[in-house]
Structure formats: C-alpha cells, structure tokens
Length: 496
Image: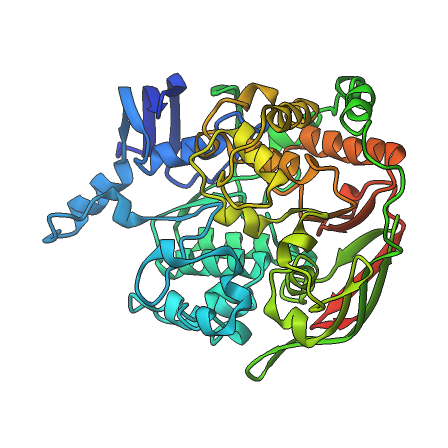
C-alpha cells in the first residue's frame, strides 16, 4: 500500500534563539487531511508553522516532507536549489512587502501617508504577478481587482491580509500554511474566506491554518490543539466541534483595579481640553484616489467612540490625521486638543497626549530592545528604544505589563516573544504615560479569548478611574468595552 503520509514530525526538539520551543513532539498529516491548529496565546502555534517551513532549528528528531518525495519521484528537478520549500506557500502575520529597490527594510511607518515616498512601493498588480503568475478567479473572490493599481504600502490592514492570501494562492502550492488568516478581515471578508479555503482544498492543496476556536472552516478535517509547546490533543473536526469551548476565567482579573489605581494615582482627574478632535469637511486625496471625503467629526473630552467600517473604508487614514502621521492634516480644518492643526505645534506636542496602537505600528516595530524597554518607549513616542527611559519610567512600564499579564516577558527581547506578547507590550506602551486620548486600532488582534476579555476588563476599569477619551477600532463588536457609547462608521471614505 502506498505511503499515505503527507508530512511527519517525529520526536522533534526545536530551539529558537536561546529558547526551547518544542520537546519530543510528534505529529502526522496524511494525504487528504486539512488541519487547524488552535490553542491559547503563546502555546506554539505560529512556531510550529515556522518549524515546518524550516525556519527554526530542529536539534533532535526529524521532519519528513513526504509530499516533496512524491513530487521528486514524479518530476525531473534540474534546479539544484529546488527544495520542499518551493512547494509551500505561507501567509504569515506580518507582510514582507518591498520597495522597487527590492529592499523590505526601506519601508517606514509613515511612508503610506507621504505620496512621493509611497510611489516607490510596488502596486498590488506588480506584487502579485512579479513572478509571472497569471490572474484567476481568486482576485474576484478576495475583492482585489479594484486594488490592482494601488501601492501595497497604502493598503489597509485587511486589504494587506487579502493581498498576501492571494499571493500565496497564485503560487498554486501543494502545501498552504495560513497563520491566523481571519485576523484583520472585515465582516464580509470573514464570511467569504471559508469558501476560498474550500476552493483551495478542492484543487488538491493541503492546508494547515492557525486560527481561533470559533473560526474553523468547514473544509478542515482535523484539529491539533497545542498548550505550552506540547500537543494537548488531536481531533477530527466533528469531535472537536462537539467539545465545550475554553472558559474565560474572570477570577484572574481580580487584582487589576488596585494595580491600575496605583498606576494612575498622580494623573489629573480632568484634562485641560474641551475637544480632543474637531474635523470640518476633511478631504484626503492621493492623485485621483479620494480616501476621505466630507468628514465632520467632534471628539469631546471623555467621549468613548467606536470607529468601524469595511477594509479600505479610510479608518487608518482618519486616525493618521489625529496622530500627526499624515501631512495632509495641514491642508484640512482640524483642531487637536483645542489647537488648530498647523498653528505652530510640533508632531511631538500632539503625540505626547495620545496613546496609540495599531496593526501597522506592530508591523514596523522591529526593535531589538527588551519588552520592558519597548513598553517604556511610549514615554517618548518613538518606534524603537531610541531614547533611554528613567528607572521610574521603566518601573511604570513593568507595572502595566504586569496588569496586562505579560510581566514575565519584561527582560525578554521583543522580537523573541510570541506575537500576542508583542501586541500586549505595545498596548502597555500606549498606556504608560496615561494619555488624555487613547487610539486603539484593532488592539485585540492576535490575542486569545482570555487575553481579549482581560484587556476589555482593563479598559473598563481604567475608565472608572480616569476621565479617559477613547477611539476604538474593531471588526468584532463583542470586543468593545461597555464604556463605549458613541459610534462612527466609514464607507468608501464617507461617514455612513
């Protein structure tokens, strides 16, 4: 009987940097099986994908790529550099877009808002078809056809995810690895994505995807559950779906109120501003592409707003005007903290009053500093640990990290901790200076259910202790804290 194994991991021990990720782990994927990997944050889901890709060091045990052996037996391979990796496509949690100079490192955070610099970026069309791939129905399924002539640096978070998925699918791989593919997608895109997975599976591609317990496409046949770097269980999809979902343990939140009260004890009860934001007929346009049109919006001190809209609606651009990242702020009637934009204030005068986090900030926060130092960089509003923090500032950073449940990562390199810990570190960075305005753009992206519930509780506790003004962006209504009571929705750059 022919070997039915597709890939097998036999008693592997895996290390990355100075940390052991897996010890004596064994797992097999057979032909015709499609797997979801689930588990709490930090359990090793992304690390397992990276291990399969050959990016981490397997120091004991072995990985057999049976799909490559089958391919090599059926094809003549003349390229000496052709390996199993050529048969794999991956969609990771971070993009690797490049400028026309072919240097990924050339990208910087504000580049998307500077028209002359963003023109050095490839368009979606150039990125997708740079290796000669041919267009097919996947573009329509992912609603990418209207974006083909848009620079990749200008894509929204959700548009970026859809573009990365299309790039992987156009490769027509034998093996497709998807790391949290639902993250960043709006409601409609999330509804469409399981159909895309179904179509990929129908072509004969084997799929492994990291996902949440509640977002497992119907074409998935098996589920692998990880916990603390080990296998907690393997299930058929039917058996897994019949199991009770993980329970959120609210008892773990009991110490938050006292800790938060201590961290904000010296903050003035009321800010010195009546209006955090006032916008009058705001218009943002790049060439012939209108991004925002006719936006009139007021955010008063103490307001808690939810900002919503589909991918590409203009949410990130709207926030960039508030956070002083977009130079078109000078060409519009915008008042920030009771002062007209462009009346002599510096961008640092604005940023010091804002605590900010977003998926794009996470993308470009490639720091070699420790998590504690990254959290402390919020005092200086720098991307990276550019200016040293005082001992008192680092102590405050440690305090917020402990409140967020990541105190154990304080001395660890930021780049070496799980993505969820990185995101929580950036949330601590937004909170350390107790700013009068919090801008939280998809703050729970990449967090597990326990972490999401915990962060929601922290915000509600913070609002009970401080006169907080907040703008909160999410595609999941259940993530909104109870204190949010005002809503603005964008649709194609206009207020819906």
